[in-house]
Image 1: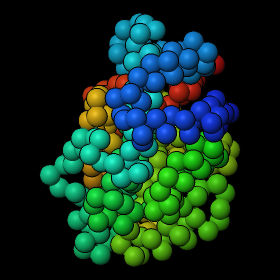
Image 2: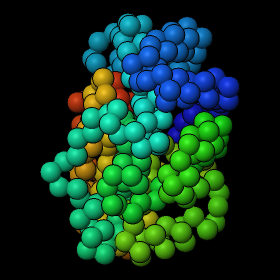
Image 3: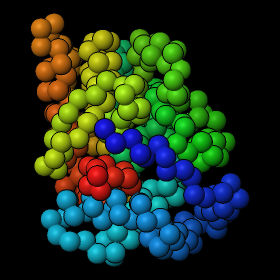
Image 4: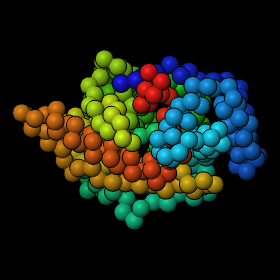
Length: 301
């Protein structure tokens, strides 16, 4: 699996990020959103790898030859969700319109004393759920997160609200991470993790699935953890619909995953493919919400 996303280092500086955050919090969201246009232009012109990745992806999902305008729309959508993290983390939910489904599935399990796994992706905003759960919705939540990719941004954002930062379980080779996951599950927490990227090629169990018509490798860990803990596995999306609108979507993948002894790998592949199918449905419904800006399908190989 291509893990070159790990080589994409942060392109901003602490001063630039803090300046944008100050503008967002003190001068308002409308003015802060104006800054997104030069940011989009910068990445469109001076980040060729990300631009090519965007165009290659959009060609798959739009079924046409995408233009630079399509790539600009894609990058702008991503930038919008990053800006809105400021409001989500600081609890300024009045700036955003967040729609929940009729049934808050993980909250229902939590109230029954049952923990669950929330399987997310780099589609839309995971921050919508984490911040909303901390401030507005009494859902105890923990997030398994790989911090190595954008440590500067994570540090600055988490300084805005330690309560949100406390929901994090680091996944940077910490052997105690899975113990903390079990402890959280046992106490009725929803534990979120991302399922659409392989963290370390050659050091992580993977499974091949089809996504947008071509095979990719996905991590086996979410399926293995759910099977080991015997907890519900719920697929989650926080889809950005433009302006200030977000829609939270839950879909139950399994009440409990059981892996047979004789066909274990085949069973893992079947469950992972079900996740990939749900992922594909959301990508097709909201194509500009895909935020994997690297050669995901290895088109350039």
